[in-house]
Image (cartoon, rainbow, N blue to C red):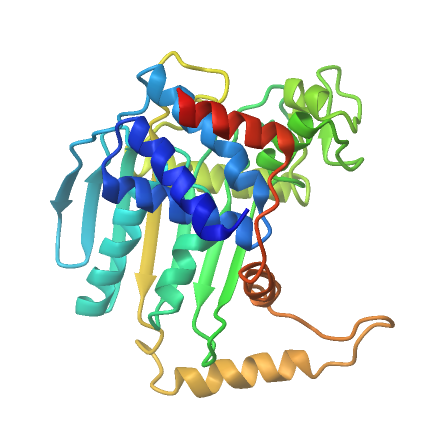
Length: 335
């Protein structure tokens, strides 16, 4: 299906679910971006979960968002249980605005929801010549090191910076071996997941995504990954006023209340300490790319390059929508 047709279809669905035209477009753009960068687990497969939560009245389609200026560079946002894209869109825009004015922007968002890909927001700051960190937490999926019960989410860590080229450096990584969205998508499509990324409820390795969802996911780097997940829970939950400590509700199965996810955006000018940042970052990247390559490796990529190539390639193609996801979308359009 052509990209613009898919975008309009998504907008129409969110309009039917009482979102404003502006906010429907914000949601559609984030979902389309996920498809184009090759992350369908955060794209069209997610629409039904957002709409179900609106129907269950645990997402507010017409939020009254409150923006509190704490200082010229620090802002707090209460997203009033909006779809996560909306709170995050406002958050990163405010952080960019603060950074442009003062050199650094610090924005905390609470009472939000799942906001899709962290890199989508960090990249926007990098393309405006700024450095960005983005943090958000998620529903329980990983057991803290030494525990046998899940509590931490797959809590992504994201960093982006300008490179002196059109393609910024964008590192967007889950602290789990595989992001939860990929497991859910595999379960929906009847596919297997790689061995070594999750355990079933009995603590045994599994390639069955449904058993993985009932069990727990494994963190990257063992206890170090557990520590990083804890760090993100503090940054995006404890500090922002959002839920934390395993209290973020599952967006697909738990309709007992809003998720109250927190986001933290830190954006700053790269030349605060050195005036020749662009020269230095180009030297850094050139040095690493010029290193001797392993056999079979044609090019050393920096984070964000592969994604940019996929985006460019997919932007000239139609979006392939799996039949069961298309059926869900068509049903949402009619409802």
